[in-house]
Amino acid sequence: MEQLRIWLDIACEAGTLMFEFIGVIILVLAGLIGIYNFIKKNPHTKLELAKGMSLGLEFKMGGEILRTVAVTRWNDLALVGGIILLRAALAFLIHWEMKKDNEDNGKDNS
Image (tube, rainbow, N blue to C red; front, side, top):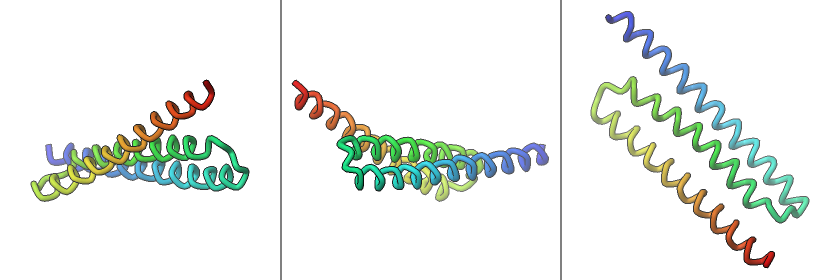
């Protein structure tokens, strides 16, 4: 049984690192594309940047959720839970901002 626990810890750590790494790559790429769109004065820069940030945060949150599997102490669980809540709040705010921008753009086109 101890061997299964070791394998579970290894799988969770590998999955966490993979999700975190992908999330960071997406955030960096979204930022670079956002800079490029800003320089080109693309009117949808803010929306595209928000979409990239949201996707990156979703991957990072997936990594944090995987991290909860390996947590054995209550203090660690509270810390991971707090991180998940903060990232979820950020994702919610980004989605809200995107929805607001879409509604504002719809009014401008009328």
